Image (tube, rainbow, N blue to C red):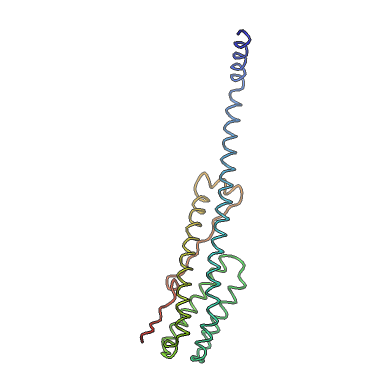
Length: 202
């Protein structure tokens, strides 16, 4: 019993002597664990954004697979519209050569703009609008555009969460320490947010 009392007293004495160091060590340990947790969270969010961008690109690829068929169909009737055909080809080339998400987003917007102008031009050619092949292509294109809109929104939602953490204190400290920077939103000009509808009833 005496030994137990002495041991307990010795323990209390050790704690009193090293109280400041022990509290400091606990605080440092908590900060380190929190920092590691936030670092891992940033890594996970970054990977989710990258994966979601791949989904956006998959839908763009669906669109690009349709464009040559649409252009070919329109060319058969509207041969004089060479400028718009050149714009579409240039936009697709820019997209293929883009190496970053931001550059691809800019090129994709150019594609949308050129494709939108092409569909407006088609309104001057009733024979095209009555073509079943053309109708089928446009239905496929509109479905693809809807999927692109959904995937882009998911991408922007993930970017918003990530950017908020990068900017908000105290997680901004971790972001700064490990070089995490804000990711760019995928903003599409309002005029290009949807491919113009083609009225087949005219």
